[in-house]
Structure formats: structure tokens, C-alpha cells
Image (cartoon, rainbow, N blue to C red; front, side, top):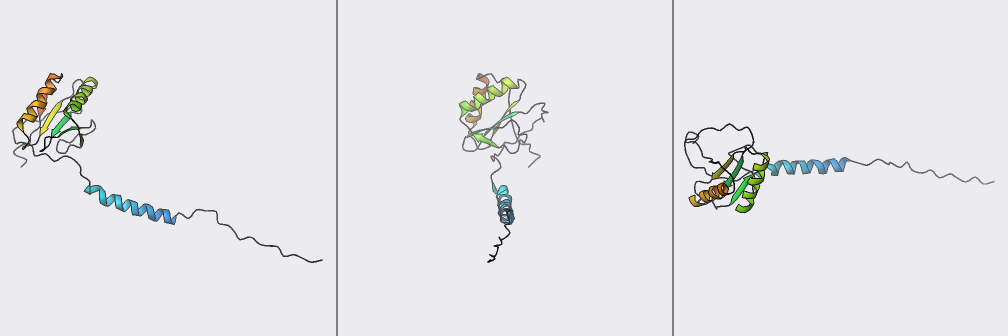
Length: 149
């Protein structure tokens, strides 16, 4: 009788080789680390100089910013920094609606206007007037102290 040779199968490695994935992940991490500081972090506003009192906040204030071009921005409720406002550009009517909605939730919330030094004075006054007509009793103005410069 003839003996047939048995075939031997090659051992199959069923594990995933993750080394290429780690390399790709490290490259992406480096890219994000390099580009994060470059991304614009806020709206640059040159505040007018004035003597002012420091306000102690019990709740997060709403800060409406007007930049050099007269564009309106509103802060998010988790933002605390007066120097840099990271917000979205919105039309005036939407800003007034958001302020009213926030005041319904937080009735003692402070509302402040940050107007750039070069912005038209009428823009700041009209914003404050519209806010007061829509139920905001007190509107503060954010200025920069002369001692800071």
C-alpha cells in the first residue's frame, strides 16, 4: 500500500498588527499639538480706559462684545474670562433673544457690554438701549484699567 504524505498547514497568525496604527496615531497627535496654539482663541477688542470697580460674581455673567467692525458676539455660559471672549458672531436680534432666555433661567445674572475702543459709540448705545427695552434692567460696560497698561 502506498503511503500518502500529509500536508502540513502553515501556522496562521490571527492577531492584528497594531504597530502601523500606533504610528498613525502618533502622527495625528503631533499634528494636533502643533495646530492647536495657532487656532484663534477669541475676539481681540481694544477696551477703553476708565477707572472702574471690580464686580464680584455669584453667577456667570453674559458678555456681549462689539469688535472694530461692529460685529456682535455673545459668550457661552461656561466662559469666565473678561480678556478673551470666545463666542459666535450673531445678529443683534438673536443676541437679545439669548439674553432674555438666559435671564429667565438666571434672573440675577449680570449683563455686560465690551465695546472696542474704535467702534462707533452709537453701536454701544443702541445695543444697551435695545437690551433695556427688552427687559434687561442693568447693563454694565467693561473697560480696561489705566493701571494695566
